[in-house]
Amino acid sequence: MSDELLRLTVLGCATPYPSVDNPCSGYLVSSGDTRIWVDAGSGTLGPLQRHVRLDELDAIWISHLHADHSADLLTAYYGALYADIRLAAPIPLYGPPGIADRLAGFLTNTPARSPIESAFAITELHDGHQATIGSLRLTSRAVAHGIPAFAVRIEAAGGSLVYSGDTAPCPSLTQLAEGCDVLLCEAESAQASAEGDQVHHTPEDTGDTARAARAGRLIVTHVGRFLTPQQAVARASARFDGPVDYAAPAATFTIGQATTASMRSTS
Image (cartoon, rainbow, N blue to C red; front, side, top):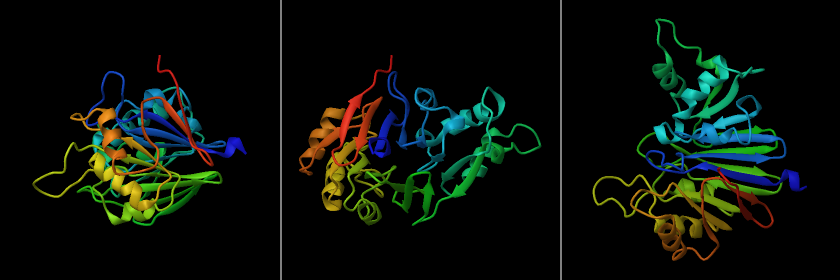
């Protein structure tokens, strides 16, 4: 049964560019033999390979097309087609509408369009999209980020994880996270924007979303450059009574009847 527990490994969570020891947003979610790369931000392909090769992935899921969540798809494309990887079939890739043309626009260097679909079998997400990938069940909801963006609920026999992607607080995220074991939620903004529409959570918003959704545990991620992880955790904890952790690079969380965390060295 322990092999079937849901596991979250943090590849990176920096925004809007990588730091020396922290790539941008990317996570490996696994259960049993099923492995999904969730967001492919700048620098995450490197640490991903500590755990799984590209040709061993069951799928890739992308929340939105900002570079700090998707840029390593570009290098993954070259790795999948033009290096030491030999794909038995294109890697299933779930992402926002237009993702194939966005990749092709960057990768095409001749009059002939680059063969994006030879590397990735692309499915465009929509609000309420559902998929079964190996032992994992995925439900995606559209969220409020100013561009097409999605959150995802990933469920296995042993537990449930909801990842916010990037978003302002919104009912669809709260509904998606209802009763989840773990909410992995961004806390990019030091304070809410005084002008224009909000497109990120503050730490207080993160705590409020977790409380409203009755999440079992909150993991704060994607903390902005004007906050420390400690500040983000403390501010979220003031609004949410459950356990609050930080998505430290290389941390692995086992999600199930009792969610635990362990740290893996990046050296």
